[in-house]
Image (tube, rainbow, N blue to C red; front, side, top):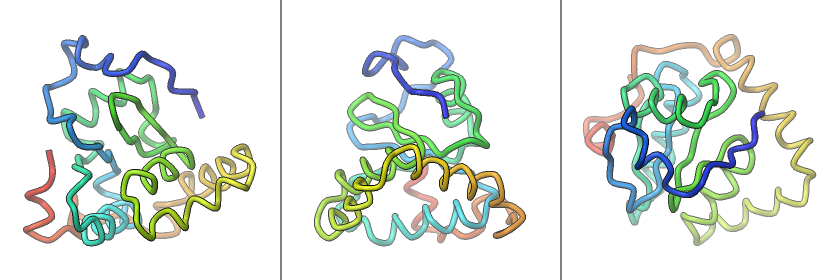
Length: 150
């Protein structure tokens, strides 16, 4: 997994990245993966304070952010928070920090070495279509959830 090390908010100076509201975290997910869309839907349902915005990796914003950070969409989801990019297990730990509340309990997984967490993440990412399938683009999102997409 590539290390994401660009300067905070570097995408603002990239003319290929569309403008977006970066006052909230942005969760970029695979919109045709059943597991990924289902996970985004679940996060939306449980993000009662609407701290996170969402965009499918297949949309212009998602594609541009993946290109900006030189990350392959098949390798990881992408979380943009306070201008920084996070991927794989580190991204989920950051998401739990952002959401707060009982989500902090999940941060106990940080005790597992990052290399092992990311190995497991990569195993699931490589096999997600075979194990969980593909769906019509963002089919698992409700009308209200689709309104939270950037």
